[in-house]
Image (cartoon, rainbow, N blue to C red; front, side, top):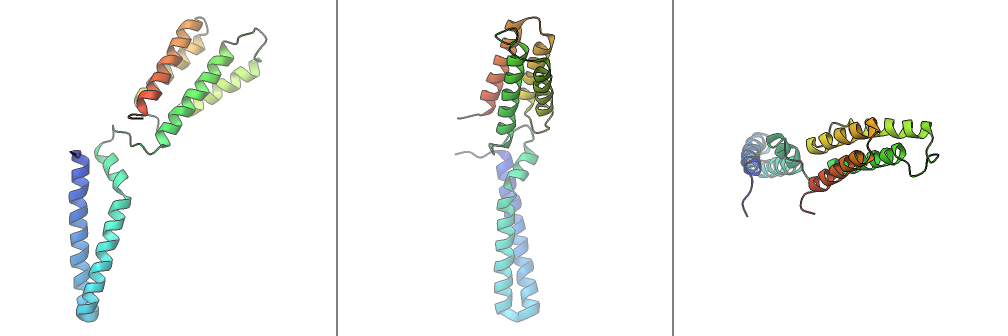
Length: 164
């Protein structure tokens, strides 16, 4: 299995941090409590640095790969919320019956769709597709064009999910 450059950089930085923490803890423990204090302080410092580095791995990898979206579920959840809000707005803009949706409900669904699409954590591909779908629905003339734009958004959300 070949790891990415960001993962290898994080592993190298983790190794350096844990090594420095162990050496620093050993020096501090030696000054404070002799040999036994050096062993205890070195172990505690190394363990703390290792745990901290393990907990920060997602942030470090996303820093080195800002275009890659980690599968933590947050961005996927926002993409799904965008899809649902735009789909309900599409259903309100092009109702099956002429008296199916009131003007207030249509405006409320439009407002919600625009607010959900404004989240910063939304992946770029989904954001662009959502903007196209909102534009097609707002025009309100061609139901087939709006349906195609919502389908493009659905595919973008599906592709964002990755290997599932």
